[in-house]
Length: 426
Image (cartoon, rainbow, N blue to C red; front, side, top):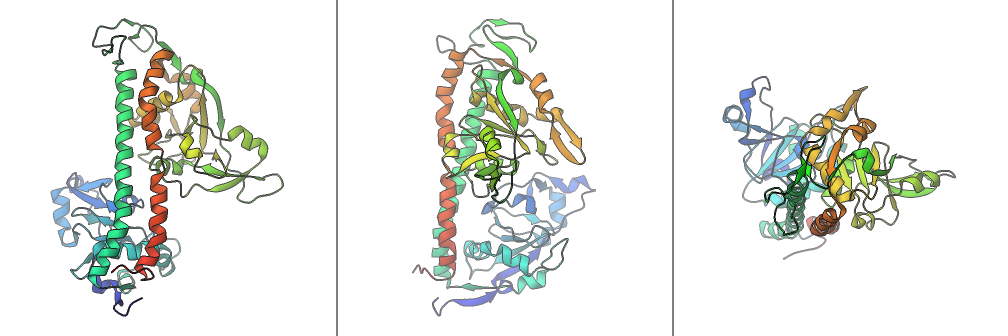
């Protein structure tokens, strides 16, 4: 580290702001204008682009003295300790977050990258057992090493290039997902699939017949989900250590892993050990669908799904299985699994899955047997399905690349070397 690097306290970097929550009893405090940042909005991304809740002008004006501008560094200091992100807009945070508003001597992104690896350190200096707390004074006194501003900016530029690409990939994946859903709805919900002349079936006067679901295109059949399933089995959490009986090492997907998988992140999928007899029944293959059948939270019911793509399977040296809070759905030859997956996504996004959910001892459980028997859809002839798959399969191939995982690994390898001065950029 060069002599021009110096040690500074966070309080010297800029203004430290502790957030606050406006009264939730007054609904007028909340609206759709100003981001209200809480730890739930900090999911490992660099910038907070969206929040679960927003404040109205009334709520913002109550707390405008503690508003933070764009490019403030937000750190959770109560409860879920050490999460770090940056604001993208003028925002208010809740009381669990201390924010740094850097002055002109410091590059905000550089400060973010300096603090990003310190989650364990924040936990180690916090007080309290049931609810860890890092008070504002102790937070302000934390010291970091910083180079002159030009070098800060160069380091931040290198590391930001990785995060910018990861964010772009996430937006691309989201767009691809939306495109697949739009095409699915156009073909299988609105019945505007192309007829033999390439024209939208329904709009071009295609023939319909009556069914228990209402009018459906001639030649289509109504089937329950259960009639489309060739094999289903619940997951197995296995053991965390190898033993004589539990000797098959594998990676085990949980419901919590569904969103990261969609974002191309496999980082936290845990290693488990299963009995070989259990493993053989649960080993995942391309085209399988996993559905979360236990857990869920307020606003996020059970019934979430993830598609098991060949590119996901290729990411692991060991085979993939799934946990006991998930269930495998493997389709028969009546319906392509991509179409069923898109249908399950469609009804989940519409909120329909909640009608198959029950509460038991505080845990939400999905009534899969009832769902299999009672949820019905119109199934297209195979030739229509094949045309659809030819159209959307490239979208799935592009979506499941896992480029973000390798970008984040490279970024995390370079980060400590750059912010310590081990690698200099002049």
